[in-house]
Every structure is written in structure tokens, then in C-alpha cells.
Length: 235
Image 1 (cartoon, rainbow, N blue to C red):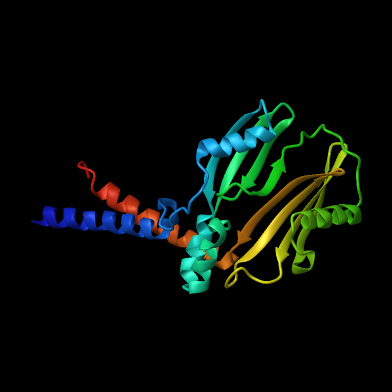
Image 2 (cartoon, rainbow, N blue to C red):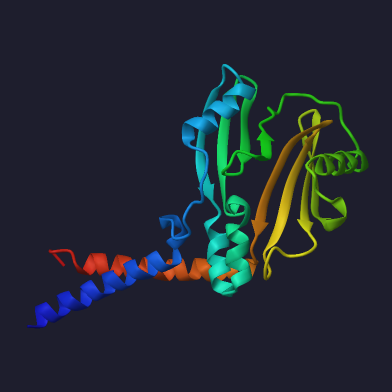
């Protein structure tokens, strides 16, 4: 009888851990369904037309922590915002293009609209240097070309790095008004010499929320491991 009770208790630990992991990792399991989107082959063909003869791969990626935060704040505005416009803030196509000069990453909405890019630049590649002020003017011009109102954005961080003979400038901009609650749209831009080599969009959720979620995930993993170990036949 004692063995049976212990086995049932151990199974309870295991099931509790699995349920908690599911609840806190539920975006991974597609709880918020993908809206209508381009198929894999359609996305590959679209990118291949722009980069003929190059190796192209694609996958749909999700900012799962953003959905967790939207569920955490429990407002209709948050979930509605995530579903708007083909869920562009939550899901996107992540496309990789390989070429001799390096790897390039392109991001698209699920229906195929460009969102951003990041080009790998080898350390030994030289571009003429520009000042911080000129680099800032370059990113402002690019943001305007993307159809964004620069007055709605502010620079949150800036860093300059010397890469062999090249100077790279790293900017992170944040929209002044939140997307919802304390979630803010951000843009990361890289200016390598006199070339813009990075323009990526993301939504930043509060750091204290991420710390809390990491603590919950670690606790859930411990519960799951305890249940699995206790259920081993030789234990």
C-alpha cells in the first residue's frame, strides 16, 4: 500500500510539472493560432526572385514571451493587438540567405511584407568611416523610407565598435508610446562604415516580467525532473 501511495504521489509530481510547463510555454504549442500566411514554398520563391542562385531557407518564428506577457496583463487590448495585421508583432517569416560574402537574415510578415534585415559583414571588410552624427542621420533617413514617423521614436542606446579597420555603430530605438501595457516596439540598427547592415524590429517586454517567467520555468523544470526521477523503476 505504501509503495502504491508513493507511486501515485510521484506521478502527481510529474503531471503537475508537465501541466505547469504547458501553461507557461503554451505559445510554443500554438495556443494563439497562426493566421492565414504564405506557405513555405511561396516564401522561398519570393525571396529567391530577389536573390537568384543563392541558397535560401525559411521558417516561421514566434516571439513567445510577448504572448505570455499579453496573457499576463489580461487585457483585451493586448490580445487584439497581437492578432492585428496578420499577427505581425508575434509571428514572422525568418529567412536566411547564404552567399560568399556572408549570411543575410530577412524578416517578413506572414503575408510576405518586408520587416527587416541583418547582413553579416566580415571583420576584414572595409567601409569608409562615418561620424556618430552622420550614422544617426543615415538611420533616420532609413526609418523614414520604411514609412515610420521618426518623431514617434527615441534612441535608447548607442554603441560604437572598432572592427579591425572599420567602425560600426549600433543603435536601439524605442517607440515612445507602448504597444500595450509596458510592451514597447523597438528597432535595432547597425551602421557598418557607411552602410546600413542591420534593421530589425522587435517588441520588448519588461525585464522584471522576464525574470519572473525564468524563475517559474526553472521551478517547473525541477518539479518535472523530480517526478520523472521518482517514477524510475529502480528508485
